[in-house]
Image (cartoon, rainbow, N blue to C red; front, side, top):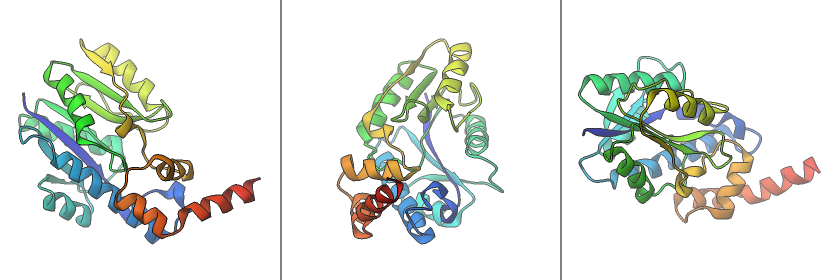
Length: 224
């Protein structure tokens, strides 16, 4: 088998708009960059038999990918994450990749060992593996073999949509809950969860450095 891990990245200066009430634009860009660097570092720890691919139209993200040893696919334009993932997956399939695991950039607690659990199922012949977000509605890991087995449907309620697609398209598929893939950072509640359970490292250090805990407390007081 020829399996690749795919990380799609949009323009980081526009990332995490739902954090606008908590973080300034430059702070959101820095947080997104730190989370991306962490994801790339964990993927880079995987055995060499797994491919590593970053797809983006954003030059700084492409440079980070190359520095981490990733193959890069350059997009002409970005319409949506689903479109980016499906177009990149189709290109990888044309190059002989048999299965693709998509990961988002915003997994501050990601561990390579959890990725290996997904990839072990892939090597055992599962055609789809779905890793839920912590609220059980999103899809934080999506493996498909072939890479174009069914369409990506990222966004609200994506896990149920991917489950339905897997049920109709795959003979062997599984929903696999993994702690280090469950927490993605989209809104202030997610940032609060990072402060509560986050792994020691650059992301957590940065949130403490800019005083996010005090900001969150202020937002709670205003909402009371």
